[in-house]
Amino acid sequence: MTQQNIHASGLSDVGNNNALTLLLVTISSLILAILWYKFKPSNSSSNGAPPLPPGPRSLPIVGYIPFLSSSLHTQFVSIAQTYGPIFKLKLGSKLYIVISNPELSKEVVRDQDDIFSNRDQSVAGLTLTYDGQDIVISNNNPNWRKLRKIFVHEIQSHKNLEATISFRRDEVRNCVKTIFGKIGTATNVREIVFSTETNILIRTIWETSLDKGGVKDQNLGAKIDMVATNIVKIFARPNLSDFFPFLARFDLQHVERDMQMQHDKMDELFTTIIEDRIQYNLKKSKDEGKNDGKKDFIEILLEYKDEKDGKPLSITQMKALLMDLMIAGTETTATTVEWAMTHIIGDRNIMNKIQEELAEVVGLENKVEESHAPKLKYLEATIKETLRMYPIVPFLIPRSPSKTCTVGGYTIPKGCTIILNVWSIQRDPHYWENPLEFRPERFLNTSWDFKGTNLVYFPFGSGRRICAGLPMAEKMLMYILASLLHSFDWRLAKPEEHNIKEVFGIAIKKKTPLICIPSQRLSDKSLYM
Ligand code: HEM
Image (tube, rainbow, N blue to C red; front, side, top):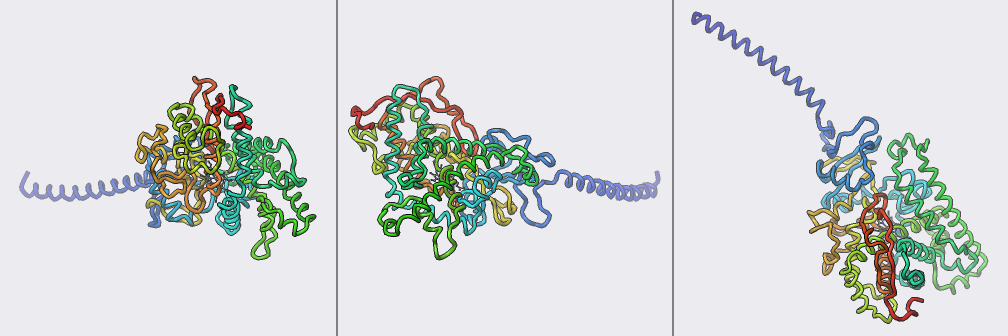
């Protein structure tokens, strides 16, 4: 080959190379474009806004629904291990964002609390609460603010809690008396505590009407217990109407129908109570009213109904509020007591420490009073540890942002559902040493409280929507547990059946009920009467 030819061929090689390179670049670009289109992160956004959080791939239409397990709390921990502390899930046509670390929780419940103070309103929730006219399910609106203010300032105020101390004392003593009648026999602690809590709430709500021709049904507590239990069970049923709102009108799984039935039973009761009281008040003179002294909750609410300034409270709003109290106040406390007793009975060392403290503070010749509570530090630490391992409402009550915003650098679209996995945060080894060990000592001499200030521990929620019944819950847990453990020694009915298996739902419950045998601890029998 001549030099010229070599050059020519070289040139032509260059020419050929250029053409080849161009072809390769074009094909590569095409392939890359196709690959990018096909595998682009599904969360990237085209308008320059931050992307949606990452999350597992899901099927068309149904999204991730077919892959959901019955133990969502543990399943969400596994998903977070792959996708990080904030991930998204598409369930039907709805977008869920799950958050499982304190830093991101803080962005929701503190830094942007106002934006995140609406609720994700499920069909069952709306059906139960007169279309969200209550506190728990209502969005952040003037109605919610008013009801919450009445509840927190009137019912949960220090003054009112002091004024209603005798109701709690009577009912907790009845509880001790009932258990005394069961000494030596297998006893379901949760059932007894549930009834005690129901009776306390009934008396706090309409004490005087029991004396004044109102509802006198002896089995009222048991009936309410049954309805409340049914309601919690219905809440635990996943509902297609929530995942596909356009299906809601068909109520394919009858969740709405079943909830309506329970709602109607409670509604009938509340209507009777309120009407009886209105009639009674109409009959009595104003002066008589002033002499009454103690006001129960119905009386307080009726004053707001007749309010001259501002917007009076409607009867429906009153009933919605009563519904909240009876449901939110019973299940939570009874379940917490059951978990605490499970661990206390399962660990003789913990039981001894609590009982020694009670003997010292209360004395073996006395009954427990609420006023002993501030000195019962080990018992308090045991309750805190119980609520660390078993935050009864494991995902809090889901919230929904009122406008599109960002959390952790990701876009959070308006109207999606926010789940804060407090259960996983409170068991995260990153924040808790040996988190699966039940160790009350970790709460001794520390500043942890229930106010949700440190988002490593917030079993009652945090921010604007923190549990409105917190002051009462704290008192009840201390008083009931102190009375049960001061008055009785406890052992498991079947020690081989000791277990701490959970069932996930709107409340985190024991898989099998705690059945145990009480024995008399105080020598003076009159302390049980
Ligand atoms: C162990 C007992 C209890 C626990 C663990 C508990 C826990 C909670 C939690 C986690 C929330 C949601 C907070 C959030 O979304 O950030 C809540 C809300 C609420 N709780 Fe409780 N609760 C308990 C007892 C009670 C009691 C005794 C009452 C009433 C007598 C009550 C009334 C309420 C109400 C009305 C709300 C709704 C607050 C709102 O949405 O503004 N709770 N509770």
